Amino acid sequence: MTYTGGAMRRARYRYTRTIRISHWLWAIAFAVLVSSGLQIFNAAPYLDASDATNPARRVLSIDSPQDGVGTTTIFGHTFTTTGWLGWTGDGFGGATARAFPPWITIPSYQDLADGRRWHLFFAWIAIVCWIAWLVSSAIHGSLRKIVLLPRDVPQLWPMQAYYLHLRKSPPPYDVYNPLQKAAYSLVMFVVAPIVVLTGLALSPGIDAALHPLTIALGGRQFARLWHFVGMCVLLAFFAVHLFQVATQGVVNQMRSMVTGWFAEKPVAKS
Image 1 (spheres, rainbow, N blue to C red):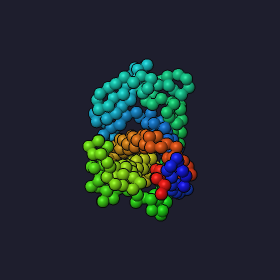
Image 2: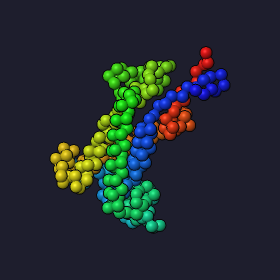
Image 3: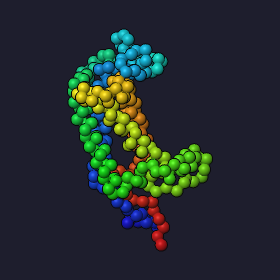
Image 4: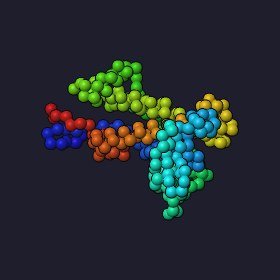
């Protein structure tokens, strides 16, 4: 326990070593997966809602219709994105027709084969970390604190009403509130598995061995679409996660994920 003025802060061991290590390794793996995934996307910079390439059902495309001009088209609406998307750096100090710029891709120069190697290697690291986190959380009883349970469902709207300033106080909750549980459950048990399955379907070797999986997902182009959308959902989730860490005691939050010890809110000394 530590003391702050007239109040006492109680330190609680919140995260086990396995959870902490898997958390940080997963964060690194996810960053590399996004970057190498954009490298792979550059080889075919479009997404079609179809079982095969079909410009008539194009959802997204990043192009350079003429040298020096980059455009991004979303659901038929085209925007000029020169310098950002479509016409960007070539990784060697020049500029070229390329969907995503070199500063955000691994490797920085355009190389589909190397991008796939990076992506596949860190994909397995991410999967192992995800499983290790789930198993460790289940063993130590912390998983049930983060998963949305049936009894939490009636509290979803009251919690949202609190965020919308429609009620003065939030409904009672433990470590995570009902909306946080819903978000974590959606990401862990819906979005992450979809990203993994679509990624497997996009692997040439696995597609050849388990082609029914690709068919079940609607074909390779649909698999690419779901994979990309899943990545965007994960990026949005972690943007919110980082915002919460930054606004809810960043030092305490970071220390707890490094050492495992979390200092709870001060309570008056008896």
